[in-house]
Amino acid sequence: MPVLIRSDIAGPLPIDQERLRRTANRLLRICRLPKSELSILLVSDPQMQELNSQYRKLNKPTNVLSFPLSEKTEVQNGTMLGDIVISLDTACREAEKLQTTLWKRTVRLLVHGIVHLRGYDHELSDRDAIEMENQEKILLEKLETFHRRINMPHLAINVDHIATLRQARGINEPDPVLAAGICELAGASGIVVHLREDRRHIVDRDVHLLKQTVKTKLNLEMGATEEIIKIALKIRPDMVTLVPEKRLELTTEGGLDVAGQTKKLTKTIARMTKKGIPVSLFIDPDSEQIRAAQDVGATFVEIHTGRYCDAESESERDKEFKMVAEAAEEAFEAGLRVNAGHGLNYQTTSRVAALDTIEELSIGHAVISRAAFVGLDQAVREMLALMKIS
Ligand code: PXP
Image (cartoon, rainbow, N blue to C red; front, side, top):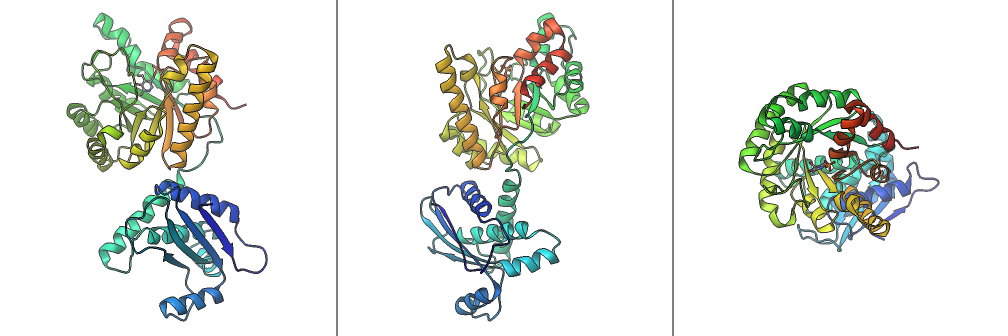
């Protein structure tokens, strides 16, 4: 039991204890301490005053006290973190003053306590206070994006193959910029293009124009090479998805080896973050890659669904689906935002769309292929219909 909650308050608690336990567990996962233990004690003001007087020689109640089990600043996963004591009386008063709810205030205090237990201390110096505040902000932001989806996921359409057709003739049609507009009008929530080093389909002009015309969200898929990074930093798409890129491949093959290039990716992500561009990493459904994605500071991961879609038997497909579902769950629980894509078609999409951990599906080939027969507008609408949660 990683999180133990006790209460010395008489009568029913004014907050949901089980919800608090779940939130504390999530916070531990976000801090990469999923196996660590934490004890939370909920008290009233008189009890808090006693503790405050005993341990800090301050004879008055306070909102939260943290008692780390170890003095070490680097907390190891699997160790006992320590105790957090929260006064719900004080939290209640503060919530009223700050015009927030008791739940939100309690979570805020819990975050403060956890950051203390991880070795940060705002009382040491101004610099430490700023660092501690930053840590709290990061944790709260991650926690805020931590909602399982209730409605259907978003659909982002990859229009690379419209450009493939254009490049086959070397003239200026069909235009992926026009295609993007049609997809948006049909209900797509985002447009994806892959600017490859060899410019085999999407070219620089497309990305520049899409940046100006896309009304939903432009996701620039790219290899982490200096030339393309510079273009992304200049154009500033709504997000980028980093993928491995090989010149001879027909399409992106495996996921990115994040664990094998953490230094390079940390640097690239930091450069993007500085310009306000969130980064997604396209990865295979693999725990090691998820942990690495967390380490290098990615906001999103896109789980590679290719092996699930290409499976040659039902049992193989079930096995691959399970891996996608588990990876999405693990990434979500770790505080990453989760997308999925590659190879999804009109047969394989519904099952992935039903996973409540996934925000968005990125689909290209199947929709563009269907569009050749029924038109792009209808092809997008048909895919959206398959993604609806009944
Ligand atoms: N996601 C990523 C990272 C991709 O590289 C691609 C292919 O460009 C897709 C999604 C879309 O795959 P598909 O064209 O098979 O739908």
